[in-house]
Length: 193
Image (cartoon, rainbow, N blue to C red):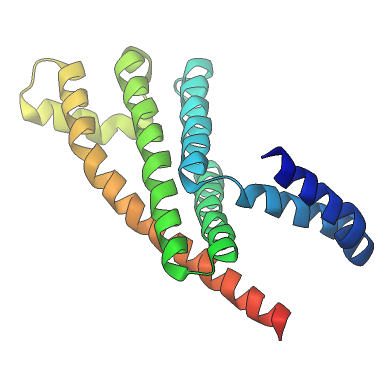
């Protein structure tokens, strides 16, 4: 890894910086570093960051509402990161299927880790978050179910939804990887034309 980074620094200083200027050269360097990270590593990083953020925000403000602006920001960052993984992958391998696979892998891993963190959140902090306004539907289903234990009901509800949500997000990740791959291929063709 050190020789690769040393080569990147040398190319940055001698070729890219003089040709592109400081800001564009810095972006080039960051893109080169990002290309060294494997998709599963991106998935772990993204999943851990958002999973830990979810747990910390629950501890700090358990009844805080998920505002539309917050949700839009979260979705944009997550989907954007999956697109970026597809872009970086296709630039490295020159194969669209690798971009799609990378997007699916990063999505599946990141959503699995986020799902685990969310599962921990709803089981550990159930007494704190059960009064959230977005839990009204879940509490209505609990009342209608005839179940006597809210914790068991919540665990069962979340356990049933996790596999399907991971599969759906892997498909979405594959689509985002494809989108990133298309941008990467298009930019590559434009730069060589």
